[in-house]
Length: 135
Image (tube, rainbow, N blue to C red; front, top):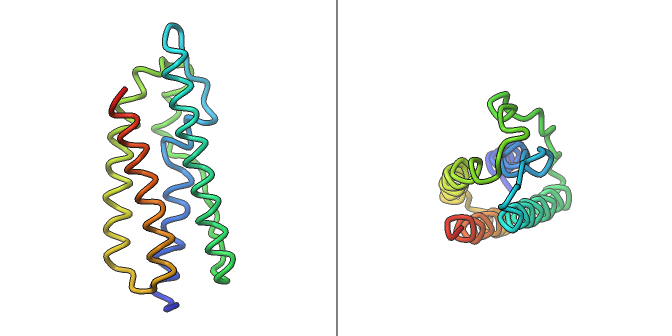
């Protein structure tokens, strides 16, 4: 795998690890009458975290050092203790952006293994995006 591909893969990890979807896994969202909605958001976030762990395992298996994830963006801190329904449009918008960024990464990757690892993240985002949009 070329150094350029390895660098691109290392850039994907922190971007995905510090996404809004990962933030809401740790935030206390208010559900009120939307308990079912919160359950879906939490399940999607957990699935996304599992997909990210699989991606991290791919990096480690290919001897690509796992970069530090860093901290979440400050703009997310306003989303603690807010209604899950008010966070949903933000989640959908960010998932769209993440999927587009991953597709741009995918277009620049030539290594088949790396391409498959990134494609798995794209597929996951598209699936989760469809689920969240249907709510």
